[in-house]
Image (cartoon, rainbow, N blue to C red):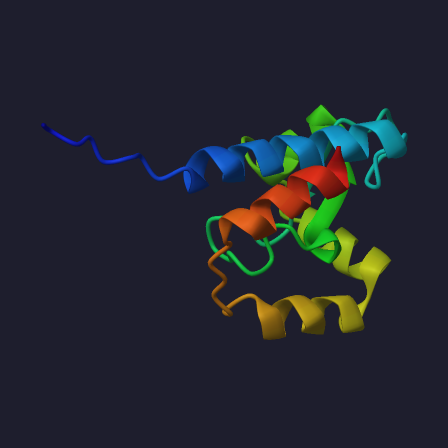
Length: 119
């Protein structure tokens, strides 16, 4: 009898947790922090691929419309990080800087708890 190895469920759980986080903030936020338009995306200030520790940390999220989100990514607006810093302050930046290099491997239970928290 050949036993199939089960696939790692963590990547799909991370995707589900990411989606739950975005959907949650679409329900509770209304305005873009940058321009005041209709909120659409929780942008990770420190990209989630660069900091697993900050991936689900709400302090790392900037709540923006799609147009402003593209100014962080597709058509970078060099003044946007400075605008965020001005709004959030040095204490916020220091928190991100001291935590950005910390690694975090989320367990199945932790990811399921995040999904439940944001549903």
